[in-house]
Every structure is written in C-alpha cells, then in structure tokens.
Image (cartoon, rainbow, N blue to C red; front, side):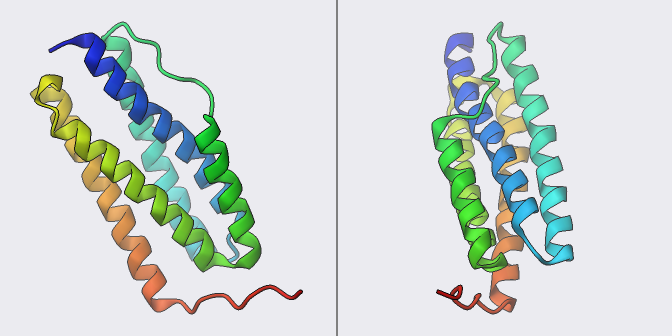
Length: 152
C-alpha cells in the first residue's frame, strides 16, 4: 500500500468529516424539535468518533490531518443555518444531502484496493453508518410535513 496515496484519500475524508461536524453543530442549534436535536447529537458523536479514527489512520501513515473547516464546509454550514429559518425539514434535507456526499467519498475509498484491506474494512464500517444516518433522515422526512414558507 502506498502511504502517500492512502494519506491523500484519507485527507479528503477527514476534511469532509471535519466540515460535517460544523454542519451538525449548525443543524443541532437550528432545529426546533427536541427528538430531532437528540438524534442529530447522536449522529454528530458518531462523526466525531469516525474523525478520530481517520485522523489516527493518517498519523499512522506519517501524514497530518486537516485541522480547520474548509470553504466547502463553511458553505454547507451556512446553508444549514439558513435552512433553520424555514424549518426542521429543510435542515434535515441539507444534512441528508451531506450524507450522500460522504457516502460517495467513502464508497470511492472502499473500492480503492491500493488502500489495503484493514483500512478498507474500517472505511466500510463507517460508510454503513453513513447509510444508516441517511436512512433515518429519509424516514424522518417522510413522516414530517414540509415547513410553510416564512412570513414575508
């Protein structure tokens, strides 16, 4: 396994996870429903744990993980903050869209045989968690009414 290549793949996923922590913070602070807030807090904790594992994997390859939010992450976070003005369902839709982005990144990494089996197994477990998050959000959206447009 080429450690430089693995570090590059991991750097992309680590940045995505770091950005999503900020996104989840905005979502948690923006939703009105307590049960939804609790579920988002649990999902955020999952992402934080994943981030720690991924950062360790980078350090094992003598690579430094990104430590700040990216411009893309700032855009995602701002979108969630703006969506909170409209309603909880808009927030969940934004977070669910970010889950799809993460699933795509993880799937690409899992299919990269040059990463080695141990790392791919770890990433496979994490992408399954992403899919469970996405499924929960899809089900939540299916049973909640869309928010009415805000007053002008």
